[in-house]
Length: 251
Image 1 (tube, rainbow, N blue to C red):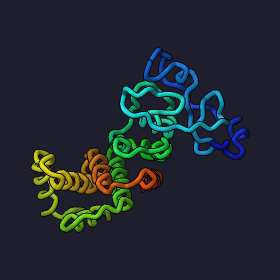
Image 2 (image 1 turned 180 degrees about the horizontal axis):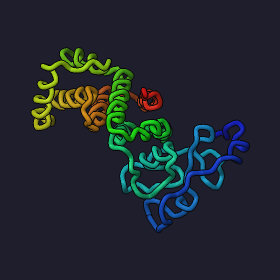
Image 3 (image 1 turned 180 degrees about the vertical axis):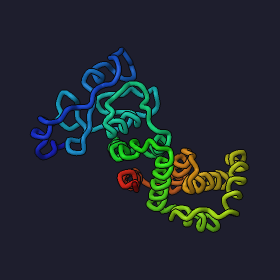
Image 4 (image 1 turned 30 degrees about the horizontal axis):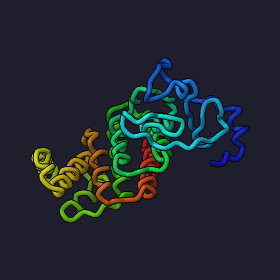
């Protein structure tokens, strides 16, 4: 991996993110990497705190039993680096709405952790939305933008419903109660067939995009996206679309 241009000069003025917590003997996260943690900036990329100008390639370490090492971080750690929170051996306190994107990596073998770190970097705007109403509007904006970028093909009547909610048009007085009723039934029936699961995810996503405070909307969107069988490169590009939506949340 090549050193970024002007990395030395940028590194001089850069303060690396810290390791959060006490250094402990953890076989899943060796102390050597706790004392000299990873850091990330858009200019320098991944690097160790001891050598900010030396780029490091990081992949994703999956499940709790995989050893985090010099070449791998967990998804929540990758997102935390983008958010500027530093590295920790405990799970990061990510918002559940953002955490839903983790499930992409359970089914797609990303060659690098970068898409999730860029997502975390973009999510700083979202994380500042502490007011509940603002947070709901931000979620609607992100889900709508991500749905459009995913280009998931659905048949009527879902096509009309999703077209309505993704443009911000409220569900009418007849459709919304119907979706709520079907959603309750779908929760019980969702594992009976692929179609039932798809309908459950579409109902939950439509309600979330219509303004429900349901953080399940992200997980349902990801589940629908995974049915399209995209490559890792395409999934990374889609996460970049999501990152753009996070950076452009309307005031």
